[in-house]
Length: 83
Image (cartoon, rainbow, N blue to C red):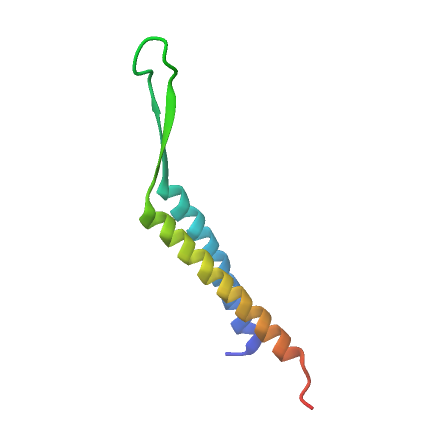
């Protein structure tokens, strides 16, 4: 596979990883609305964070970042002329 094609595939994978990270993050954060516990008390919203989904989102973002770093490295090293 050519260097150009490798960079394109890595960028596409990075974009997919970021999309998957957003999906995982949204699955990992759930909000619930609660009625007042007693008369005169305010209603409130509780938020539950699922560590598994948040961790998966974090891993995907790290992976996407590494792919982008590799694309930049390939681009920079490919543009240098050998001496």
